[in-house]
Image (cartoon, rainbow, N blue to C red; front, side, top):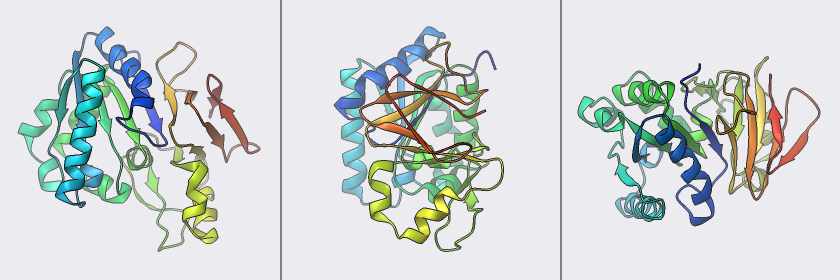
Length: 247
């Protein structure tokens, strides 16, 4: 695990000025591990949105890359067939930061599982690239993604990078958006799975400091909101600079 890169689970705010400091630290962490000043942005979770919406994400990412004085790679992967392309996967190699942005988490995971693009993301992260997932991107990294229609504790298959952790993004607003029955389902995870809620413009980060670790699921809170531990012990809110220990 010594070479695994930093990992950030972000509640919202990818590419926005308010998250530039954190994204810059993630990028520098990768660079310090010998990787390139390259910022790969994967918009796959929004792949079924309109052309104008995709262009919006691309322009937002370009502005952030400019703030960070980094090379933007906006990877045109919008479907599973795109994710199967070896030529697109090759653009991920050597990036200091790989960022999986928001949209539909189930579509994201289903489109990425067992593809060259996902293999490249995981391989590079395990070799030192920083990896961030925002909103749908954070949810998809879990072992499963809650399925509101099935009303079951076990949801659709996730990317399984964090098999014992379920992330609820936009936590400070999420439960105002969905029915109470769905809200309860989000927290009622399978045995052995911890649940965290990450507020907007906030992240749970491992690997940027020696106090944190992906291996032990020890995260530091970064941002203006909080990270809420919803399972494993009494519900608790952790704020900027505090550690969330999940193992």
